[in-house]
Image (tube, rainbow, N blue to C red; front, side, top):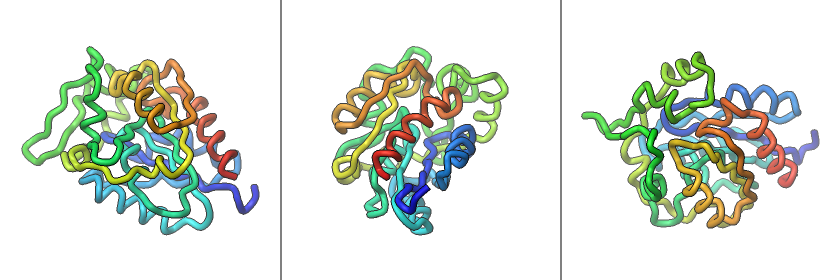
Length: 229
């Protein structure tokens, strides 16, 4: 690929780590893309944006940022000029002054969505049964068990800090609406995607399509990368 081919930076959401992108990374590399899975501490929104910026510092040339779930707020918080476009995979997109919690709880939750509350340390863990019930209900039992085993909690400041001006107001964006999402209902996703002016693809997938429907996720990323190049 040419020097204008963007690097793909994948950003995980809450209760996950970079391994959640495992079924996407290899195929992207086989297509000739350089790929990074940016690690987030999940300690505050500001900390997570800083961590993403450190990953971006190591990259030369244009970048396509890809976010899952909570990470939608993180990729919108960077101001790095290398970023050419944003891809939202069932992700959250608070506008300026909104918090992640504001958009997450915008609509009535799905009946099978887990009830979430911080522990004594201000950390929010996903109940183990929620991985099969809501986080990745279309995944194999072994995949659900792995997701539960590697989960990382998210701290309250990640979801309670008001966002600044989001980068999606200044960059083109793509949005995969997960129609069978039991964590972030499709109605909320469509609202955010429309408000962003994103290129929208809707598919009958669960909250974690990078695990359960990676070919659809790859298609959206490829569309953004082609437009960027």
